[in-house]
Image (cartoon, rainbow, N blue to C red; front, side, top):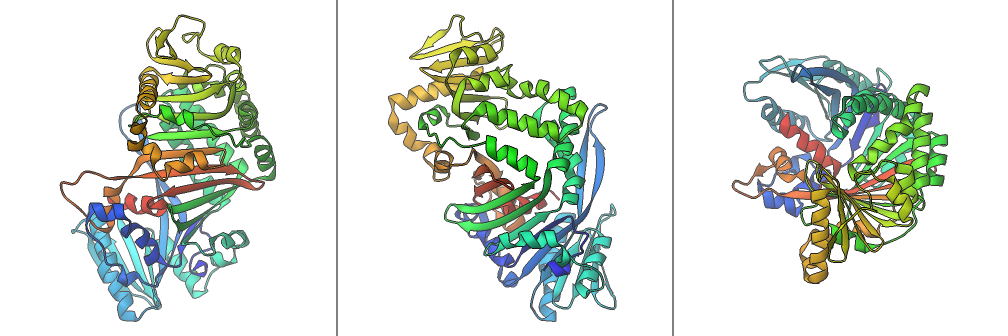
Length: 512
């Protein structure tokens, strides 16, 4: 399939069994529960598909006088090798593909057909001028949102121009796709193209402070451009669901620093999970042999990847990362806690969050906290727990023996209530999410970082693209576990979920 797309491809995705990949979604019990109509995928049997992103269009939409939204639209072409007869190929375009475009654009979209020397073209045009393109060339169907991208792919497929098959970097990483359902690759040039927009996106999500946003959006592109060489993705089915593996290949210097300093201690303390309220949305467990050294190494790698001026600001800015937990000196704090750290986000927006840690050096921890949370001040006794609150009643800290809770006052209070309830009635544990199959990965995994997300994927959006959503049914959501490891050549992120990244990609079309 790589021989059918241009060598100018920035991001490449491929599946040698498209129907089987979609069946991972449509045959999932959660999908069946929410769908009134299970799609017939028989027409896609034996279909191979490749998607090539050749560039990006950026546009800015003004929301208010002070703010705007930056949109990044990829220029792509999808190539499907049907291995079928001409009437089957035409039926694929006239049927499913035509319905898909009308579903996205509306029934008013106009279709134009024209025959060229080596292919038959279909052009869909909306009233506002948006266009999509398809072409039939032998047993292949090409679909694109950009005419130039389509022409480049057709040229590569005919052998008139260079294809991605001649890219040695892609070829060397292609072995990772053996036996997998899907393969993806982002080139160094592709990473550079999206780095700026990625930096802005992260900045907006992380903070409302304009200075902090400016700093994040400035340094993230520098870090990506100077430390990341390429990104590889594979997807496969396992007993726990769909597993997506993303490998971020970093330069040798970066890899050497991270693998030597960010090391798992293999510590396991299930007691920390006893504080998680039933409504918890996201939980992350960090297992670091030396949290302070790990933090320093990240700062070092970051400083080496940015300009000298920005490097001098990183240390000062780093302390603000832990401010939501009432921590003003990150290094001092991390030197005083043990290897396992758990953070939890209770609400969808992230306003209510807390951290659970084990104290190793009380004085170091105390001195690293905000002046509003002085652990030498008076406290409120709640059972065997001690609770401190800030003057503005925004932040809170609590201790139970050597366990420390920090964060938003509402979140910390709920965590203490949950812990007490579980101690009084162990049967409560049987009813909550911490007994789930995926959650077991959180404390069994040997990764340095593991995140469990509840209800972060709206199944209804996915169903609306592939099937038909049942009416008057309660919305269903799926869960995800993401494990992060550092290797000698890069960073591995392994995501386990019901529908995988394929489901996330398909769900995006619900908004198009």
